[in-house]
Image (cartoon, rainbow, N blue to C red; front, side, top):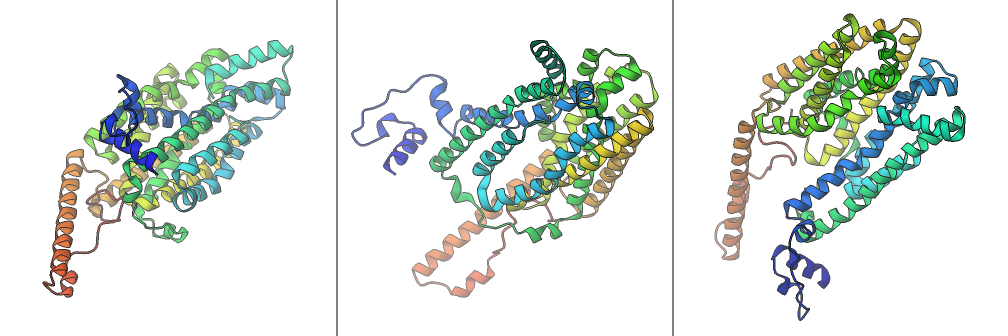
Length: 454
């Protein structure tokens, strides 16, 4: 315990001479090392952010391997498009249940630290389905050249090599768990916990705005991920692209998302107005699908629009969950959101494969347009409901800061009154009944100030 206290004093009080009783002074290391070791410093937080980025890298890298290898998978496994899309469906079916219970387990059983490690292990063990559009086709050709022939063995070796990225994510999870435990000990973060416990029955109390957010999420992403899963052959057949060029254009959504997500995230943070940004993203996605379905314009235009809108929607939609549920329910709310999303992806993947086998790409695009249109309708309903209930989902950043400030002043007032009451009790002044006159109900943890809990 003394070693922990010494480490905390050395980092937070800034003096190596204070690090221990009689211990030799450790010379300060100039540059980045002390900052990287200090949880209160920006450099340490940036390191954690970098590890969090790579935490999901393996899973996302492996998710779209079937899309990159669509021709090879159908040939080597001798399946039609419907059976090919079952690869995506079987990825989604377990997550319909696991995402919801995963959120519950993180909230109530494991905590974020152990939950991250355990679920990263699951990703490593279960990899074998799924990314980088440009890399995997090239990798398959190299493995084919090494083995001397194509076939299921070549396909399996290619996917196994791609699965190495999941091990990288597991390493990041282990490092993050250690850093989080260390920061909690040094900064005493555990003292800020609310003590409230999530119950599965709380799902029935989810508000209408939250359910509308779920619908927007499902209807939007089912028009993006299954399309990318089938996009390579679409660009080859309709626009006459080569296999390599089709892979390149099919991957542009993710290529654009990488640099634009932090930019759009900063934009949303600085401006607020989340619903308006979600509306812009959905409308842009709808325009992109209409262009792909009914025009012969260069598909790079539509795919670039799709990449921009995909990035913008993620930055504006997902944070809104935190505005409408208490903090102790966030894991379950996000898990439920992922569960519904995976349910939609599983069903739509199968339907998309059936439509393509029987009707062709034009009918498939019309189907995707219908899905995005339903998402657009849900955004409009969310705007109306939020406005009618006086919600804060479409507040500007300035409005949210003002409410946070007034919220902090309220807490300060409560603390001062409580301290005054304790002093009066110590001196025998006042009556115990004064406590009843104090405003005792604190706003739910995790709610952005001003949220009506709707």
